[in-house]
Image (cartoon, rainbow, N blue to C red; front, side):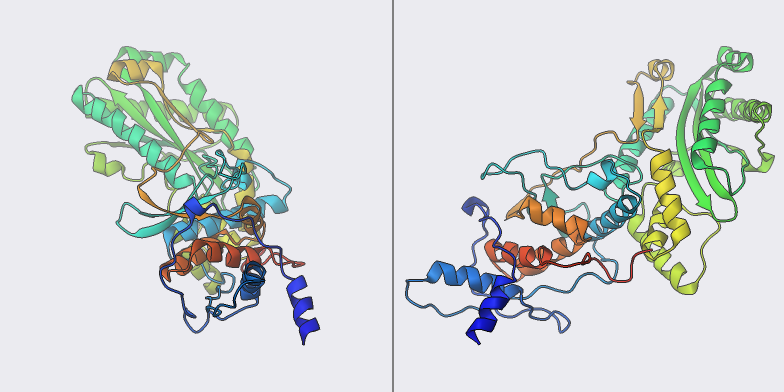
Length: 451
């Protein structure tokens, strides 16, 4: 029996680095076995017993306290927003890594920027309240990639973009100018690569502002254009990149709408000269009368990742999908094992990397009395850090291993679950580390979720 226990302990992972005492949370009462029925005791507690035994050798025996076990790997999309974003970030990382792609998205949440007390860099876990007043687990000391195609950073990029758009429209109203929303598209087929059609639309949009007809519009009161680029995809229709443009005119809303309609004709003419086609019905110009009418303007492909993933799970179960999908919906379907969606998501990440998302040029900025704005994919973003309780750190090697095995959401969930129960941070860190670092031939991510 003793030999069996020695062999079992030898197979367990080495103890993680000690957590600095300044970051430990006091444990006022010894916790008892916790959790719902499906959360069961595992061999992880052996790691704690081994460490506790080593500390107590040569001292008087103390009663063994009961430790909670951790849950099984995630088999469903987490409901809480922070945990869900980590789950989807791991899904995106796995898709890109499988294609040999190493970029800012695959490194998002890994690279740290500040050192810890022991001279190494480790993620720091805190409790804070989000904007809705809910208590959540925040992870500090990790990088943010700033990509609009990242489940963690996309919502932050969208928030920043909406703030810039709001600044523009407030300035338009203050100066009694007019604004219209113009949507420009291009026809394509399902086999056209995204990089090709995206480059074509960008070139035509630039050329549109260099023709003589555009100069005449400026002479007649057109202040300028502010574009926001979006892209969706359909299995039958292929990629659908399009641009939403704020048309700003000094003579009011009606003049902005009229100028927008003339610009649509220029757009279509330039596309035809380059061998592309576009349908009249797909172009649109409408007046902007209130800020509320622009909710979600240009940001559909950056937000709603969790909702998209839940919808995708239903579509996968029912064996159907919409004709047009946003980037978050592509990732959600890819996580369900849809190969086409996985290929499209990877193509979008590679083809759109570094693309400008929103621009307010110097001429428009000067007329509105604001600073020039360029929002690019990959610009630095970071969430607002709210006051909260520091819980402790998870060693960087454990956190990075969790990313490779698609378990970062699981780690965050266990931190919340165990600290809610009053478990001291040293035990939380040990239990999580033992589970994540357990030797295995295959990643311990959600089973059945790979394409």
